Image (tube, rainbow, N blue to C red; front, side):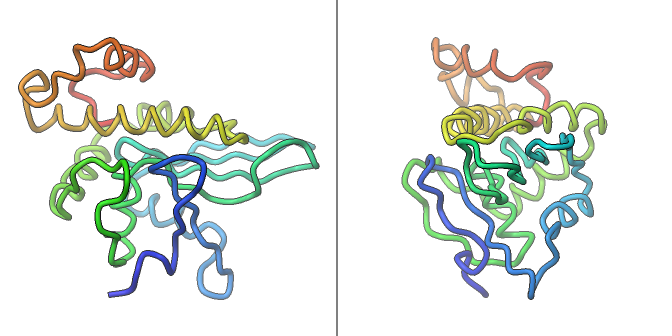
Length: 195
């Protein structure tokens, strides 16, 4: 099995953020977007003349975000980033890559079967609901925005547990002020929604 490092690098922006390595000799520029579309996950886009281009796909609790820079303003480099540990682990499964051992700041690892089951539940959601979630990843061009999105992804990953267990029995974190704030940061989501 090929190592995850052939396609991804850990980002210094925040834990749970990974850069996708583009190698146009091996894969087309929209490789991940097409892979995710093939499994049923839509991509939201935002682009206008003389401005940055943005693309975002919801993956479990996290996101695939893409920035196409325009101009010389203060911005991250053009590239594709995966935000969220579960999103990264699922892509390793879909790409048949050997993932790393548990990373610093990562919650307990989910099995391949759990990740695939969570994906199945997510793609069963209405497309407009998935696109609403994807829009949270649009307009991200600074590192601090990615850090905020990583917090949303972490909260979204906790919400995925709701489809399997009683949330109060699994994670009393949702009753804390931080948990309530994270819950409020996920618009139009319900306890039975796979983030």
